[in-house]
Image (cartoon, rainbow, N blue to C red):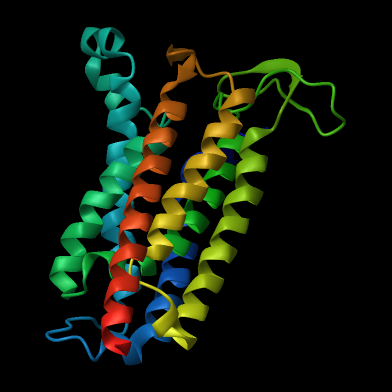
Length: 271
């Protein structure tokens, strides 16, 4: 793998390069979602959006997500962190998916309030872009060989990372590649859901796309962890698996509640 690109006197970490690419591409996806929803958004009372709000949202939420991912990662090993905190806080490697989700989620709630868009509708808009950004970011993990790969495998597409940040000469599951394809597929599903709800708003409640994001990404991450090398803690599960179960549970509970409320409102309207 290629952890660093050397361009004359410059040394560029490929992980950072792919994170920047992820933010850039996800901003375009988010802006496209804002643009296709603009006729509906402009009907909202006090809507404070602009023609380039997608880039603003990704800029703020992306930075908050990176901070959350870094902080969550270092606090997974608190004894090591408190023994020598500063180098771990500002390392270029080691980011936790769930921490990134929490950091980004808090920032998105703030931005939804700022743009005067209902929180659940705002989360619907952001969900496909979040999947795309995560998927591209995982290519950074693959290029840097930062230890996010899986357990040894004899499958023909197994890869070794002898020059990685966390090197291994064994052929292992390239789990970042698996995640790239899975999250891009989820992004496509969520995007199509958004298109359907725009065509037929009577058939879907605000927040359903976000719920499916929580459920699908939670299931995907839970399953991928079975072939990852992360340590186990909760009932034989990794931290990421425990967080994934929370994500799925929240998504299911919220989805059922939204559907029940939506059916009740629809029944009242047609009575």
